[in-house]
Structures are given as structure tokens and as C-alpha cells.
Amino acid sequence: MTATAAASDGHGWAVHREPGALLVGESFTGERADPRFIGYGAACLTGAPRGQAPAEATNHPLGGCRRDPVGPVPPGDADPHGYLQLTDAHVEQTGAALFDSPIPAREGLEVTFEQWQYGNTTRAPADGISFFLTDGAARLATPGAFGGSLGYAQKLPDDNSEGQVVPGVDGGYLGIGLDVLGDYFGDGERRGNGCERRSPAGTMFRRPAPGPNVVSARGPGNGSDGYCLLAATTGNATSDGSWPSTLPGRLHGNLKRMPSGATPEEAEELLEPLKRTVRVRVSPPPEPTATVDVDFQDGRGFRQVLRFPAPRPVPDTVKLGFAASTGPQTDVQLIRRLTVRTGRSN
Image (tube, rainbow, N blue to C red; front, side, top):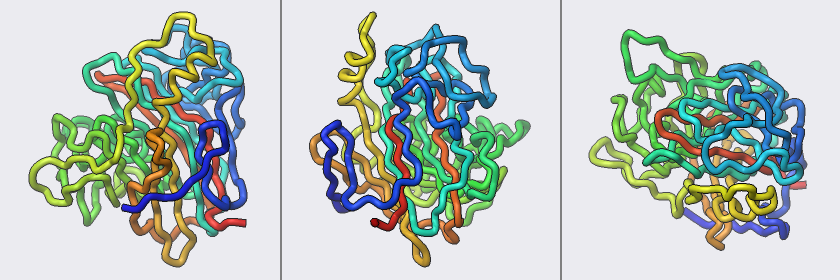
């Protein structure tokens, strides 16, 4: 895997050389966000004043976070130092932000965003954050199944044959799992149902999860079918043994406490070392390639962690979303400074 050159804009975010045309730009640092983003479940803006907890498993405009947070979350009413908070450290939370407006994709795409996973109140953190692209011709109204499916893929909870499959996101094209727990890598719970190529971890529901601290990519899917594993940052492609991560750093950051009364600026300073900047590229047809680069805030800039053939055909337009969840294990999961550009430079 090769390193990828990047520069800095002086404010801590990495900037790719010769960027293409800007298609979407949202910092999520203010009291309001682009209204084309639909909030789902626990998703909220820490830049807005705190209020009532958003209703579970429903869509809503992105607004303030709940008055009774759990875990070391950033303070509320923090404009212009806020974040998109997908979950705090409450148990059994789901949160997503969905951009239900088509974005042209035939010239390729370059998507960059900052993400934080930290602050677990349980022995291990969970579940992880997904970033996904869907076919722009389909409506993006709800995420997919949560837990190990990270709001992108399908899921039969606990592989219970008497249960009901929770469908994946409609018109799924590409789902990148930034997975601290490790279930997204595995095909347990009927993830990847109907796929010819299966996860090296097999189709059994595993405990502990097979791929902690792994970035995995899953492909197109609809309902209970598809969402096949395409690539993952593991050093073992066989079905034997464990599947250690090849990432050159940790997705999860170590911050267990936010000081009482911390100002938005103080919280921002504490959270800066925990930031991981992610860049996802899909090159233009006819032979599109997908790459994932991560800056682990270690002074080495972006490093390429995945490169694989992108699913074909690339849709003419795409929509995008972020999703995260907690279960019996918890984490605080944040997003900031999203940019979407064409893959071709000006």
C-alpha cells in the first residue's frame, strides 16, 4: 500500500492536490446544516441548543442534541464549534444523516470527512461509523440495518432463523465501514446474502466480532440481498484463524471524560488528537477504482488503506449518508467537515 500526498489548509484539515469541482460542502459546525440532510434517530447538531431527545428510528430535521447525554460529548449550543453527533454513549442508539439529493457521479467522486469514535462507557467500544453511497435514482429515506451492518447492509439479528431480516439501505452502491467492533467485516446475520464471494470470516455469527479496527467495503444491494464484501483491511484472506487489521493506526480515540463546564473551544482542542480524516474516491468509468485513505493524526498525512475495483456500472448520480449505532457496548460518534468533489480536477 502506498502513501498518498496531501497538504494542510492551516486549520487541521487535509486538502488533496488539485481538487475537482465542489459538489457538496457541509462543515456541521453550526446551529444549522444544509436542509437537504435528513436526520434519523439520535443524529443531532452540537452547534444547536440542546432540547428533547430526537424520536427513535424516525426522520427529522437536524437540530439540537438531547439534554441528558451520556459520555464525554461536546457541549451543546456550540456554534461555530459544533459537530454532527450520530450517537452519544447511551446504549441501543441508532443515528444517521441522509443526503436525499442526487449528486452527479459520471466524472468520479472524491469525498472527504472527519470522524471521531471515542468515549465508550463499556469495556469495549461499539459499533462503528459507516459512510455510504446509494443510486441517485432511488429515494434515500431510511438507513439500512444497524448493529454490525452499520446502517448500510441487511441483517438477521443474532442469526435467529425465527426472526425477520432487516433490509439494507435502498439502492445501495458502496458502503465503507469504519468499524471499531468488527462485525461489518463478517457475513454473519445474513450480511452479503446471495453473494458469490463471502467474507473470510464466514457466514457464522461470531463472538467476539471477527474484524475489530477494520475498514471494510461492501457493494451494491437492495432489501435482503447483496451488500457483498468487496475489500477489508485484514492481513488474512483465508477462512482459517483470526483476521488482524492492517491499519497503520487506531480508528478509536482515547478520551473518557469531558471536563465539566468545558467551553466549545476547549472541547474542540481535546477532541482534535482523536480525529481521523477519511477520503473515499471513486474514479470515473469505464474502469472505475475505489480507494480509501485515512489520516490518523500522526503527522504522516493520508495513507491509502484500501484500493479495489469499484462496482460497475457506476450510477449516473448518487446520494450519500452516514450512520452509526451503539448496543450493549457504547461510543460517542461524530462527523465534521464533509466535502464532495468531482473526481476530475479543474
